[in-house]
Amino acid sequence: MSDRRLRVSAKRMLTSSICEIELRDPAGSALPPHPPGAHVSLETPAGQRRSYSITNPASETDRYVIAVHRQPDGRGGSVSVVDDTEIGSLLTVSAATSTFDLVEAPRYLLVAGGIGITPIRSMLHHLLEQARARVRLVYLTRTREETAYAEELAHPDLMDVVVLHHSAVSGRADLWPWLAEPDDQTHVYCCGSTALMDEVRALTMHWRPSHIHFEDFAGVDALGGTSAPFTLTWEPTGEPIGVAAGETALDALRRSGVRTPSSCGSGTCGTCRLRLVAGQAEHRDLVLTAQERESFVMPCVSRAAGEAITVAPL
Image (tube, rainbow, N blue to C red; front, top):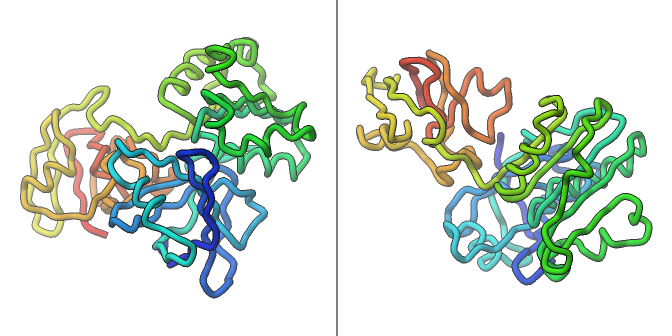
């Protein structure tokens, strides 16, 4: 993914904590295509690398629009993007990529929770523009005031398409009526909190797995599940490094004096990408495509699928 410098051309608060930022090429050139559900990785003014979904329609080739949830108790990336940018600021931004591909289907059920609306909104607009499939969006938030794009999505033209549910008013949403009957013609796309996605996973256990799709920028647990020890060989020196069950490959590299760039530590930004020279990796990241996983690995979260792998810098 080649980086480029993009200018903040517009900025507005969608809610008290969600900021929409529009990015354009300073020279007015078209940007690389962004399929529905795609995201970009950008360098915050404070120097972190963070990934954000593109929320504007894929048909718009002159801009990327992201919506950032400012989290003061987070790792600082969202605060920097919201507080340290202004119209005219230049940010280093990757080309758009997608691990949340919108497949062709007769029908779609889109489920969004909170800031999870960002990739889902892009999908919704794309499907409405194409008018080749039936689509329904269920968007869950606590209050209308905390609902990004509330006015747009509550428009009368979308009343048969969009269901807005505010838990502070109507209580906890019951998704079972939407998911009770498996449908081979419908694909379900979900983005939101871990709790929401876990709920949708549980409610769709009787669906075909290939019909259920998730996007998760909260990151992954690098040591979750089965984390067996393995040997990591650093190709430039040939040094074998033992990676314990309770540490990441990135931590083991650092312990051995190897310094490689990193940022998010959760498999979402792509900064720590290394070449996979030998062995098979157990990929746990949310960045690499299926093709890229044959040649690269994210050491912040991923491990060896066997006893050993060999990696090298890009």
